[in-house]
Image (tube, one colour):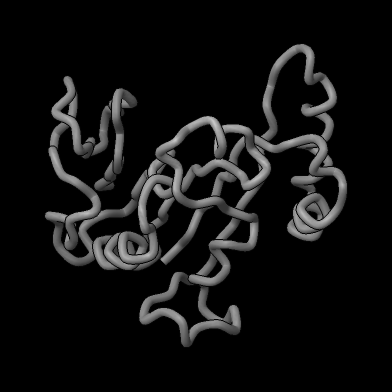
Length: 174
């Protein structure tokens, strides 16, 4: 299996090609993801890990190029801050916010296929909550709201947002 760790920073992973804009120890490919296309061939990767990068850029052109370099049935694993996350506001480099439904726009049959000239076969996601001893209720909230997609939508549409989430974890299969 060929795997890419996109925007790895200091999160260097064994068994992955680690790509980052900074020339850090362990980075295999130094590249700015805003410069497209990425330096890889069509259908080259079985898995692409994309943690904490999409919120910093205009991500739609990058998603299209990730789709290009992903093999058929390959998986794109994404971690981004949930729109209720305080991390969205703390980091001045964050440009985008995400809902549990954001990535559905890139899935075949979503009903908005006309927006994009690429599509994934499916997207599965879950919401994570801050794990701190003084946020003991977050452990229970995470279990409840990740029971199914409807529960995640209920969380986003109701005052439960008084209990902010931390991240979205999304897997998109080509």
